[in-house]
Amino acid sequence: MADFDYEELLKATDNFNPTMIIGKGSHGMVYKGVVFKENRLVAIKKPSQGLQSLHDNSKLENEIRVLSSLCESPHLVKLLGTSYDHENSLKNKHKLIVMELMPNGSLHDWLHAAKTPPTWPKRVEIAMQIARAVQFLHEGKPLVIHRDIKSSNILFDSQWNAKLADFGLAVKGVDPLSQPAGTIGYIDPCYTTPCKLSTKNDMFSFGVVLLEIMSGRKAIDVCKTPASIVEWAIPLIEEKLLEEICDTTIMALPEQMFSSITNLLHYAARCVSQNEDDRPSAREVVVGMEKCFVERVRFSIWRSVLKCMVRLRKKRKLSQTRIQCIAQEEGQVDSDTRVSRGKLSITIKDVLADVTFE
Image (cartoon, rainbow, N blue to C red; front, side):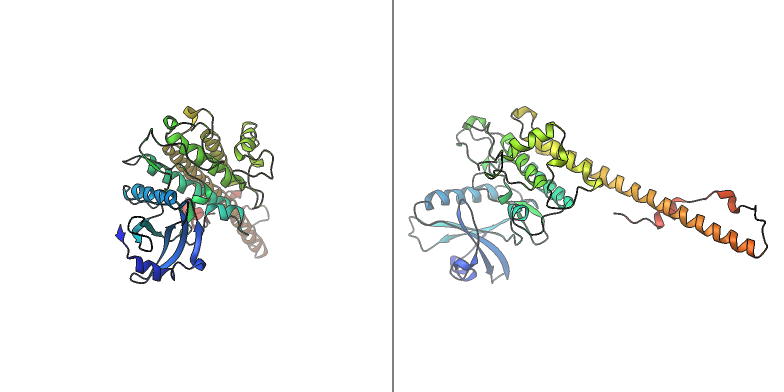
């Protein structure tokens, strides 16, 4: 983690010009900037000014403390360094943090505001990436509970890889003194007192995100009845009306994706269960999703192989018919003669040479 000069960050953001703001979080503002020394695009988090500044600064301090204690992960937004706000007095100095820039926005924006929402394969990929992020936190040393997993805290890098961000509310270990915190619609209703803090709280929030990814519906939407995505989706899952949950703003669910989406919806239902013991661990979700992915690929391959076998049979049969017609015209065979007696020989080599994987 590097120490950035404050003057360098001023220059990078054109004196924190409002036109450079790319987001606002619980900590304050997020600015886009170019660190000229490294010629690198970064995101700079700066605390709010005024009455909320002390509270926001504590969240930034917590984010620095948590992220700096973790090994680097491809599934978490990377902390690059910190700086001090020299515009404040020495007594009230505020820390700024410099993060890797995530130029493609948040999952919340992609699901609810984009003209072209993510495809079904991309949704499954996003779910897997976030599950791995949660697994990394829960199995880390120290263990970290994020406490604010939600679609607006899932950001995309330049390659559209999803990463978990905003560790302002995160807790290292199971801290019995931390007061319940989170976002309405995502926060675990079982998390009512400090002693109820556990990794199961994150799994509830992750389950809400899964439902959001699969349905395209917001976690809380006051224009709908019921407003809660959990209250809406769980009865449909229990009645096995899974396709009614799937987002209708994109193409119909492809056949080869059905098992993956079904699997994810069942995990989502378990994650948001009122019984914490029924909730799966992040590892269980990752392993189950990986197994389902392997089965889907295998199904896709063999389906392609079978299609090619049918296609090759038709080609061979057509070729044999043409050969027989030519032979008959040249008087080389009788009209009753059968070329290869109607049997076709197709080898695996023939099939694989003509396979197109989907």
